[in-house]
Image 1 (tube, rainbow, N blue to C red):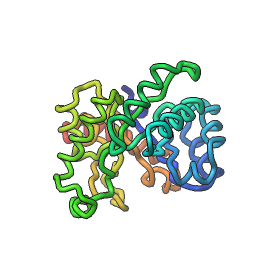
Image 2: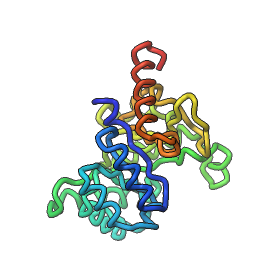
Image 3: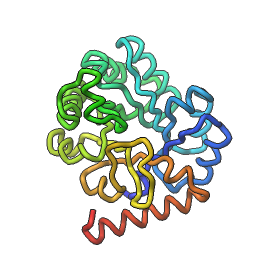
Image 4: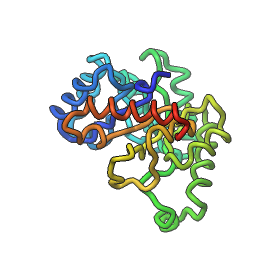
Length: 242
């Protein structure tokens, strides 16, 4: 896959004008645009429709986590918006996740279904914070456990940090998609992420897609930042440093 198609730009804003400006600046230069809870809460479904109508793909990252009936109806509503990817929380359980996949298998009225990804352990969480909420296992073990549950439910893949990519790829196989946030070019700030990697390192480890936000959107020239990221990926892969 062309490296630029692997980049998902996180539209982390609550401002419609700003989000659409980023989309226009990056049209044709990246694979997808991520609409998360901040932007969706502020601007709603119409903003998603607008991006889709511009010919771009949307990763709707709302991390659905509720009773199975509510989550399946939410997932179907997302499909009708025309999004390409959605997320559900793996901690919602096997029945919740399976219900979503069963619904998509039965209802073809909205056309092609989105890729369904399970959220495992947020990249902002540390081992200490996991223990505080009652998860005693090491982070990587928790991620693998939840990813195997998602795979059992029929999900297409998971969202996981760079640190878990290699283990996930070996345990879940080549066809299981791995979408990786916590991506930071070598010259970027860590911000609020704990488990991070450069784009080239993440791809070499086996990630399918990279979610990148502030290193692109906080730049004075987002398109130029994307070009620098792509150049760094090509350099890392070419030299074998990734």
